[in-house]
Structures are given as C-alpha cells and as structure tokens.
Amino acid sequence: MRSFIYCRVSTREQSTEDHYSLDNQEQRCHDYIKMKKWRVAKVCKDVASGKNDDRAGFNELLSDIRLQKIDVVTVYRLDHLSRTCEIFTNFWKQLKNQALGLLALLRALIQRLRWGAQC
Image (tube, helix red, strand yellow):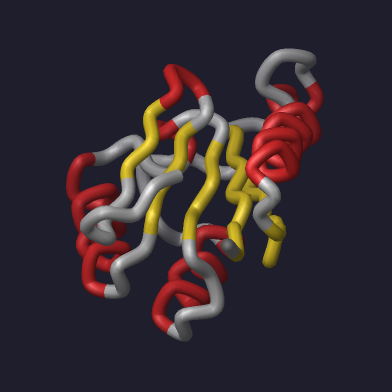
C-alpha cells in the first residue's frame, strides 16, 4: 500500500510547536504506516491556510492522485487537508474517482473507498 503523507499548519510558529508541529505530524503518520507495513510514497508539508487550495504540497498531492501514484492519503488530522467544505468535497471526489483511501490519525478516522478493502 503506497501512502502519501500530507502535513499542514497555518503559520511558521505552529510549524515548530510540539503537539501539531510538521515534524510531529509526519512522525505520527510514519509510525502508523510502519505498523501497517505500508510504504511511504511521498511526504509533503505546507505552511499555509487551509482555507484555500493554492498550496504547493496540496497541489502535489492532487497531482499524485490523478497520476495514480498512491493508494492512500495519510494525514494527522482531517482539517489539515482543508478548512472549507468546497475544497474538501472536491478533494474527496478525486479520491473516490481514483478509488483511493483516506486515513486521518486523530480520532482514528479511517475511510476506504474501495468496496471491501480494509485499512
């Protein structure tokens, strides 16, 4: 299973805070992926607002989805993908169209869009 890790914070200050730092988000995602015996295909991090989709890492994620380079997107928290329903809905549709999975570690939300597939 090829996983794309996506990490985001809104400000430079948040990028180094202990609990939600970019490095902490990435490490927690890596730990889960290792436990599942998946493979990390790519890691992208953004320091930008989740209210827009003009983010380098997010756009790289969308590109890898379109090119079918991954099987699952792994994030620490679901709201790190987007802070708007419109952006998240468009993202979700792209995942669904490619039959890809989404894993958000916080609150253990696991969604798989392939019928019968297990995370």
